[in-house]
Amino acid sequence: MPDEPIVPIDDRRLEQPSESILEIDDAVRALANRMFDVMDANHGAGLAAVQIGVPKRLIVMDVPDKAGSRHRLALANPEILEVSSETEVNLEGCLSMPGYDLPVDRPARVWVRYTDLVGKVREIQADGILAICLQHEIDHVNGVRFTDRVSALRRTRARSYFAKVRRHARAA
Image (tube, rainbow, N blue to C red; front, side):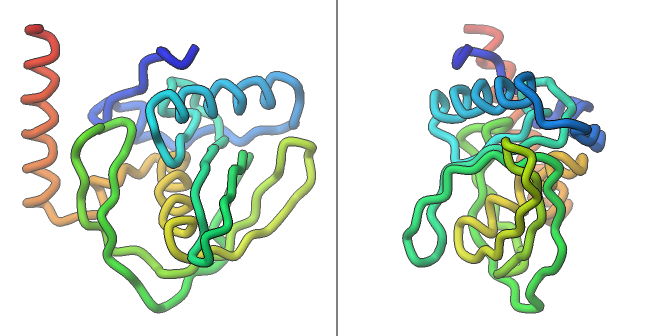
């Protein structure tokens, strides 16, 4: 399943909020495992279920926090509870638009509530790459793309680039 296609950034499904997960069951755990396989095969830091065509509020990630501790997490129904007033601009990429990074301004720290794969509600405070990845993937389940968070000019350039890459890929 790692060769599973990832939904491209211009697909309308990425503009729609995903459905809540009502119960953590074997199907949700299997979906998370499938997502980890796809994310790992594509050398990603995070992936939302909608990016593989499943409009559920489930994200996976494998990133370090600012202190360097790794966080390999599956988060069902993640929601941002609070953000810092301090922001940072960082280059972000997306598996739905490989090979193109954009500078995105986001809160430097976030507090997130989610349900883990055994059904326990948890909270995590994050900074660094972990905070960026959480915000990026939660945006996906909310129907927001990282290109929506940049200026109109950058967004237009990104769309033009991606359209050109897709045309070349189809021609090959």
